[in-house]
Length: 335
Image (cartoon, rainbow, N blue to C red; front, top):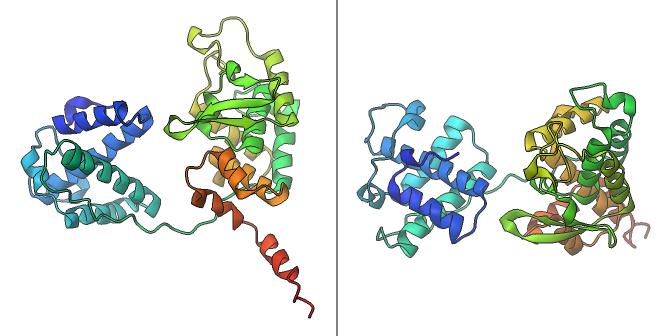
């Protein structure tokens, strides 16, 4: 939750703008608040406007009294210094720094171009940190089958944690592995979002963009099996249409799904189980579809809800066997 009393008025105005005019999600607005507040605290420290003398106390600095005069003094090197501080003190990775850069860019664009509260935009020439070229972690086909078999085992379903909801857990993991949907998309599925006749599902992805996901037989079967045992009485009034329910008969939470997935992966005996998460199952779905399904990259982009195809193209580089096979199939290979 955002404590608006801790912010200068212009930051709160910016947050209102992003929530309404830009129609950003509550999570994105919360991230903007965190990023910009942290940046402004660092600026007060860098400009010698706080009582602290070391960077370890930057987060303790109050910014509710910050004025536009301070904002007008910020230059591009000050932003670079903030990013360097994050990398040194928090070991922030390029992906994290890129998010900070995006937040700072939007903030100063609002302050300078939209509201004209400051004369110059110090983030105008701010570059995005070069990302690390890391291949996504994913389960192999055999590991994926083992995970599904483990979740479907009635003995195992009662053998860990407090989760005795085998059909629910199986349906969730089946959707994650077959459709590559995001965690937020999974927990927000309503029964009314599912078209059983045409075997398709409507989800709301990033940026509140709606897309259609076509469900294969495994998904339809898993959902139907779960609906047979899904609680019908005593469901919280806000969760009556929610597909996946917690043991408290409310819409299942992110944390609960994360816990279930980790426990099931561990129970499946998958090596380095702790390195896999819900998001890794999304990577797995994309990788398996590309590797075994002969899926066109554009179709994969549509399915995953990626805005840019460059995000999807990482899955074209995850399989060294395919690269080796391509070379072996070169018509000059045996010349």
